[in-house]
Length: 251
Figure (cartoon, rainbow, N blue to C red):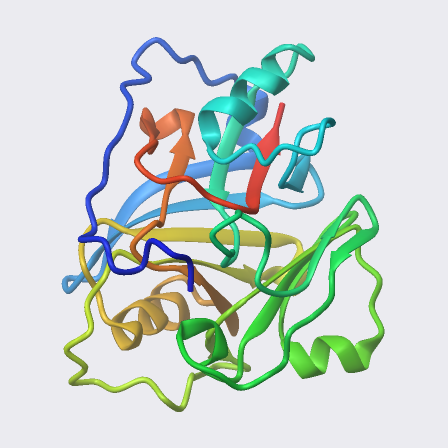
């Protein structure tokens, strides 16, 4: 869990009314506002084979980006555009990842499979990985056993959906409600689906949405109260919280 988990959830969006979204961007990232009659969720579906989907943590000088604004500015300096971004896994106060983190094939942090307090250690937790034309979500021990060496990977927890089943610790009548975000996969990893609730939801509600509405057999919780989204097509860019790992599509 990030250090911000105690903060009352508030979504702050920057007006992106002047942002334009090209046809090619729409082809690789489709964002929309959905609901199942119980909760409302902003969802961005990414064509992994077509998109430049990657993870970001620190700039070339080793300073954490800390949020969408600095990352967007850095990419603009390279003639690139930030099309979509979301916080991508739990982190410590210094913005370093709590668990496994791989960027451009380099493992910057080892996997953390230990039991402990907080959402990250609500086992089983899991890993979201990206490698070429495919992405995946796997329970941590299963990921480690596979010996997969992806280009990008980030660990968080708990798992939301595991092989079509909800995490066994989620309660239908839970009183814990927060803004939550997560990621799931479909189409044998060719499609990655990122979602963030527009209001406070329980783990059970959010996981059920991933399984039943988004049709993801495997999905991973990314974080709670600090959950943030940058989506040009939704004219949304949350800038309230500092963050560690960021998953993004670059055009």
